[in-house]
Length: 315
Image (cartoon, rainbow, N blue to C red; front, side, top):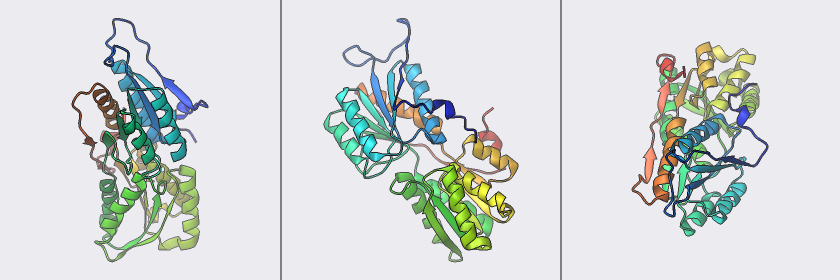
């Protein structure tokens, strides 16, 4: 299985994304004249959407002349808290956190705030409020996806839901949004819901189990991200059931758009990785320089169907 992000999967735990520039280049400096240093802890560089967000953070760091030190939390809240402690010890100017969990990562935010270092959460939330948040409303994504299924099914049918990491904001809020819509349709039923941990292979395995357990009772699948959705699609295609079962997922990664072109994925919900990554760095710079910044930046989700898919395909 090929993924565009594989070259970024380095064995090093610490990936320094510095930028060497000539003296004539513009630089974003801290108050003491030194180049600004921002530490970033990413949920998992195994996930294409996270890699896409990180790519945009790197681009913005290069454009603005700051030093971005990135680390991979490898889905571990414990490791992520330790990484933030390390950034604090390094006395970075600001921190960007892509949280692994809502509650378990909250101590990381508390520690940064106590050290008077601005901390910006990107893409996902924590129980403790950070200096600023840049991302999208995951409840909205869940509503959009489930409403698509309700409309296509005429408000009748059985749905299964593949969820993200349990306890992460994306999982909690996308499930919340989906259930809000489902409550409006008494003839629609949630047949099964379980985590596949944002992972394509695990999504495929879970869907295979559900096909064995429920077979033709399943009318639609909602996956909390495209990776799991594509895994579910593969299981359904292999079982000869895809033409009978709708699948919608979230993120609109290139593989998902390709699956839509082939007619295997029915819809996805676009989440703007470029804006999230760029605005997280912009906000971190402003906070570090004590300039005015938005405490919350919410970037809307958009439903992607075959009708409007062309505008989301990167040329």
